[in-house]
Amino acid sequence: MRFHLLLICFQLSAELFQGNTVAIPQAVEPGPIPESEQPGDAGFRDLPVINSSTRIPALDGLRGVAILLVLLCHSFVESARPAGMFLSKLRFAGRLTWSGVDLFFVLSGFLIGGILLDAKESPRYYKTFYARRAYRILPLYFVLLALFSLRYIPWHGKVGTATSFATSAIPWASYLTFTQNIWMSWLGTLGAPSMSATWSLAVEEQFYLTVPLLIRKIGKKRLALVLLSIVVAAPISRTLLNAFVDHGNAACFLLMPCRADALSLGVLCALLARSPRCWSFLLAHRRALCGVTGFFALGLIPLTYWDERLTTQIVTFGFSWLALFYTGCLLIAVTGASATIQRVLCNRILMRLGVLAYCTYLLHNPAMEMSCRLLRLVNSSEGGQSVCGFIGVGLAIGVASVSWRFFEKPLLRRGHEYKY
Image 1 (cartoon, rainbow, N blue to C red):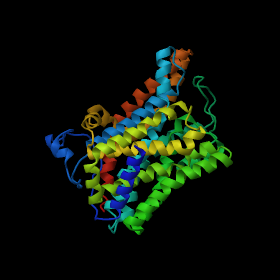
Image 2: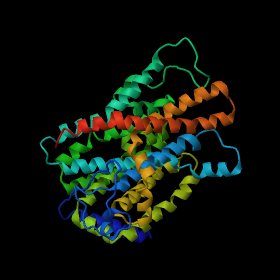
Image 3: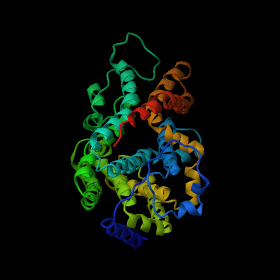
């Protein structure tokens, strides 16, 4: 299996440095899937190339899987310990659900990297990219940040007993500049729970300050080498930080250079999909692709047993292993390698979760914290604490549905008025 994996990687690398590029689509809001694109349909599965008009519904479903993993992690796996042997074992089996963020990284690298590769020669390359990115990311984030700023107002009263409105250890200005992950790694804390998840947003924004320049300025061959170098350098940097720096394991989890392997693998996939020879190779070896991804899936078993996310095994090679596994999942979804997986990812509910993922991700922690405050006013038992996570998740999804329809979607249309 390892020899087969190395052989496939070598062949892909060889193919990458030849041929021209083709376009690949971005995921869009779920809608009716044409019969010719139904999962398992021969016309879909044997498509020789993907062009810019082709829609990939499975990518919305894959994003739905990512947010579902994160929600399960924060509402169940990391919540109060459940009573009963079955729930305890279920909680143990879900210890890697936090890695839904790694799947987000791979997906983001693929989608955003693809946009940049397709628009590489545009005279409005930087302006359009950052304008669209701003319309997508900033409005909702600033609404959350404005609500969070209330934490710094001195209150002369208490709201429940879950926590206090004390000043966060993380400077407020760092959230404004997307540098909170640097402060978090320096202090060894995620800060206020309601804003703790924003570290991954900071990682992505920092990554996208540099990648557009690389894609614009260097050729395809050199870009592939640079991305592969980042994939190799990331676990080395994590190993050194973990061994020699205070709070090094937290830095491995939070800092952009340490997590750039997942993002770079996503961009590499976008690059592979734009090489006709590589794309044809992937389509011709879809069964092998499933086998390689299954091999990486087996490696998740020992990772699950190695305790929490900041153990030495996880922060050194574990993050990279997870990134490679999710890269395989991405390629399976894009190439239609498995009809069964394709059907699962094209489930309407899962696709809808994918569309609502950004708002849900930002709001689920504040919603759970608010639920805990309210529940602890009337019930201080362990059972009451375990329920608040699920209530908060439901509230976050409900708000995200309204936000998508009346706030985010109109802003996306406005952002797409900027043309490449």
